Image (cartoon, rainbow, N blue to C red):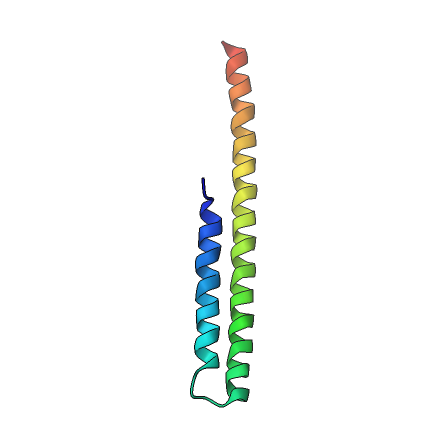
Amino acid sequence: MKRPMSGLMMLVGGGVLGAGLGLLFAPCAGEKSRKKMMRMGKTIGNKSDRMMRDIADRIDDLADTMSSMSGKAGKFMHLR
């Protein structure tokens, strides 16, 4: 079974590669294209960092919720 995150990462990677190739073959001067690629790389890096922090926060929240539910379930089972 293929993991959904790997498919998403392949999609994002393909988009980045395609955008980079588009800039390389653009009619702009080489120096201008390289600057654009550097800016785009920094932007993508910043967005991916934010996305990974957001995912980590959501996983922490989920773990806290599951832990809380586990404690409640244990108390419920003792009451029966």
